[in-house]
Image 1 (cartoon, helix red, strand yellow):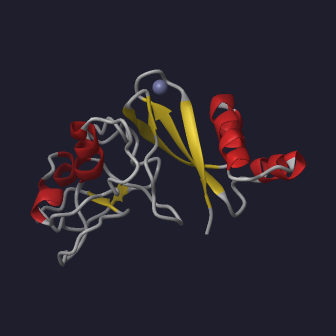
Image 2: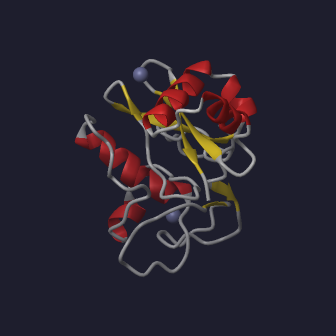
Image 3: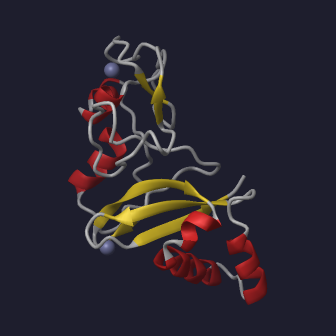
Length: 177
Ligand SMILES: [Zn+2]
Ligand SMILES: [Zn+2]
């Protein structure tokens, strides 16, 4: 991690993922120009006059003040409520075509690594195997077509890569416009 940003257990490198970037913008929550701004999703019914700095995400003040969530709390099956709160209210979300979803493993939220293509995925055969299994369940019966889809990830469709914070297994799901 660089630049003395707060540490996010479930999104350890938000600069690499592009969710936080260098900016002279003022934070919509604390009003400070910290040099960094959050660029991804925030769900709220309130009017928010701008974007947030990483510190107002980390301490929960942005989510509390604007009664919002950075990630939808749907889909955290078998995960403790404190973890769900940490991910949805104190962790930067990420950019995706579809509504972002957070993967879980070992009864804990996984850490978001980033949006990747086949080259990055191939380094993590565990994630690739799990994607293959998921796609078969979704009805991809033609193995040639399935492999072609996987090897072309990064061109159009991409994969969202996570790493289990408990056992280190890599997981992914596919995203497309
Ligand atoms: Zn702030
Ligand atoms: Zn695990």
